[in-house]
Length: 311
Image 1 (cartoon, rainbow, N blue to C red):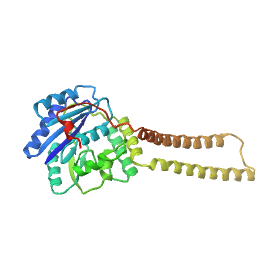
Image 2: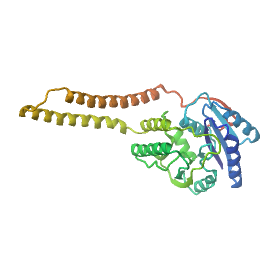
Image 3: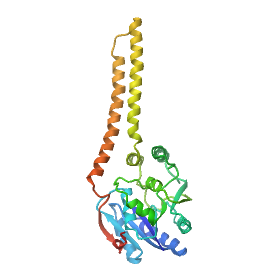
Image 4: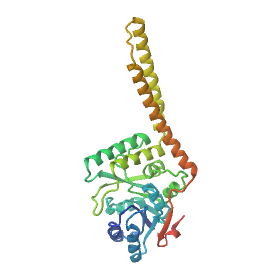
């Protein structure tokens, strides 16, 4: 039985050799037949060249490079498509997902688990701003998709049948972490502590994390569209209350002339309208992207016999 490990990489030239070495040592020590698949997501540094170097020394190490940066979700799905294993592990290539947990995942899979989720016990050392934005991201996503995402991660093992289900989905705007929940199947969990990066810096800023949250929320949930109805209802209720108040003052002869009420009403309703149009426009943009039918990613070159693994 073969285990494929998918490793999305963006400007990770410093981590490639060390990651391949550490993973190889852990998997060999546990007698696990494996392949490592690095996906360079349009990296601007020497990431792909480093993958070539380690691949020349070990044929079990393979790789692919995108023609440009398509994002982590695209890199994950490219790895799933190119993986030939009976089970597939997705993990970060900076080793913040500890390789020592993989043998435990492998054993659970051998015992019948079809999805093995890596659950974070701690988030490691992070700045306060990043910790708060990450916490907000997971709270938003948990509410939107009605699944507990607070401790979840992309670090997980999938059975081949689960991989085939995910690859068979026609949508192009994907959210791997949520889709693996949505797919179902028999699920087990392993906990781990997030490790510190040995080389390089995180590519996620607070702004990019919030953008990631919005993109994935709208690709997996229609709840933001329902907020438009809520805001419309609140606007109507506010208008009714204001109408009753204004009428009462007029009938009692205490009405005050001026534009304050009118201006406030216009600002409130205008704000609701602009926000509603923004939400609707974002969904229309997502529909537009799906209708065009463009591929999730474009692979410019590969290393090893990776093409033979396509299903």
